[in-house]
Amino acid sequence: MSYVKGILEKTIEKNPGQPEFHQAVKEVLESLEPVFNKRQDYQEAGILERIVEPERQIIFRVPWVDDNGKVQVNRGYRVEFNSAIGPYKGGLRFHPSVNLGIIKFLGFEQIFKNSLTGLPIGGGKGGSDFDPKGKSDGEIMRFCQSFMTELYRHIGPDTDVPAGDIGVGGREIGYLFGQYKRIKNAYEGVLTGKGITYGGSLVRTEATGFGLIYLTDEMLKDHGKSMDGAVTVISGSGNVAIYAAQKAMELGAKVVALSDSNGYVYDAEGIKLDTVKQIKEVQRGRIKEYIKYHPNAEYHEGCANIWTIPCQIALPCATQNELNEEAAKTLVKNGCFAVAEGANMPSTAEAVEVFKNNNVLFAPAKAANAGGVATSALEMSQNSMRLSWSFEEVDAKLQNIMKNIYANITSAAKEYGCEEDLVAGANIAGFIKVADAMLAQGVI
Image (cartoon, rainbow, N blue to C red; front, side, top):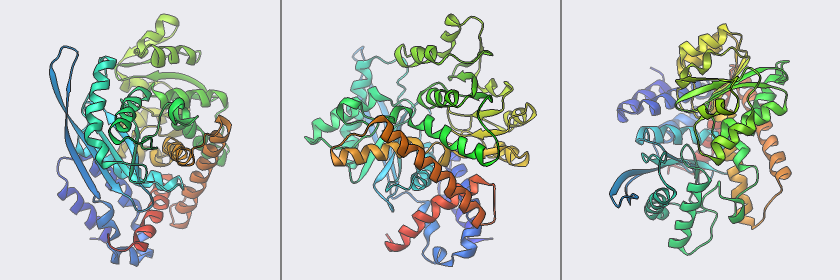
């Protein structure tokens, strides 16, 4: 058995009942065999043994009082995975599905995604099994204040800088930041995704979606293709999906479908984004309300079937493992030539294999959705300097970062004998930077 496979087996054995974490580790480690064939020093320094083990795992109780005066209790998490290249950086997810295994999967992915940005940020992730859906602003505020009352002691601008993720948007970040400031009596750049009035960065809301399209555009151009006129299906209808759709439309794509956890809308004439923004950003409503405004569109219960819509470009932007082998085969059969991941690990391993075997251009999440965390790091820079940059300045930096990511992952894939495999290229390029930093800092 090879060294890499041995570490994978030990990791699965040591972390039972965490399938998402196992999946993420397997996906990365399987790409690293050619690296370890060339770099014996990594093995001698125990880099893999260390990188799969979080530096710190924090689990805590979050008690809060609902609008009926009843005490509720949730569980909070923060996994500080790797700080070799900078302070821990990664979002907070509030969703009933959250458990330690999911947070570890997200944190492990974050190490390499953050590395690919070229910015000095390590990998971490956190969250809670709290469900913000259907809660009042008061309930969400009280939960966030209780959550931060424990979390504050583990984070800081040079230690760990959380951001938002599923269930944590501008409202939640505001409540979290307010409580941190209140407890610490310090105005610090400790959270990103803040509002513009109190230290946030322009483009942060749009960043993951815009970055996804910038990288997708680079990939398409590199293969003589274009978004112009391409029928595009996007899952999700949060920030990532909305702003991916906006930027894709600017480049000439025809976006025909969006979804949420209940179902999806299909508009053969092209999705009207102003309507979606009104429903999701202003009313905080469900995507099915779209057909009230556009009766020619169709609404279908069950979000998984969005991939049955014929398209040339598919952008999964909802959640992990939403696109399975069957869906991948359907996309291929219907003429899809490119898939880029806007969510974290939205395609199953079997789906990725289908895309590879059918020569579908495939951009993995840790590269394709790195625009969000890259802009979070730019927000950290602005906070540290007490400056704010214009929308155009931040957007230009984001475009440059995404172009560099694409160049670096294609170069790494070529150097290690897996040309055109962007999954391997992203894993290798992200890993080498972190591994070299770990080597330099000794056994810690």
